Length: 123
Image (spheres, rainbow, N blue to C red):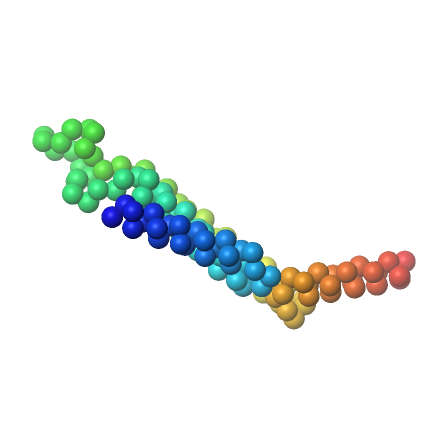
């Protein structure tokens, strides 16, 4: 089962890197979201979550057999932070769309150069 998780993590990481290398800002945003989810999955797998072991202490269980609650807490925190990053990035992308009418980074760079050169000509 762990090898399946490893292949899935590798595939998701490759997809996110591919999307992050795109020139379109929406693809870049989707790459960030997938990378965030992949990181959560890595934390989950590294935490060795064993469903057969109960997360509470009984007379029969020793401290070494307990489920680790730290990865679950880290994943919950990462989900909240990822949602905040997604909301902030969506607002920025909307502002770029309203300013330049495109989400292509090459066209945005060209439009910025025209604005800067026009400002220098006015001075």
